[in-house]
Length: 41
Image (cartoon, rainbow, N blue to C red):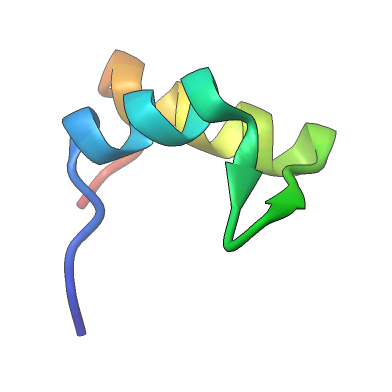
């Protein structure tokens, strides 16, 4: 299983889509937490 990196999370937030579907508010918060470093690996 691949690990989600900060750079990948930034790209997803910038694009606003995953596999062509818009990300939800909950996903947006999750990726924000990964970028800020608040989410443990």
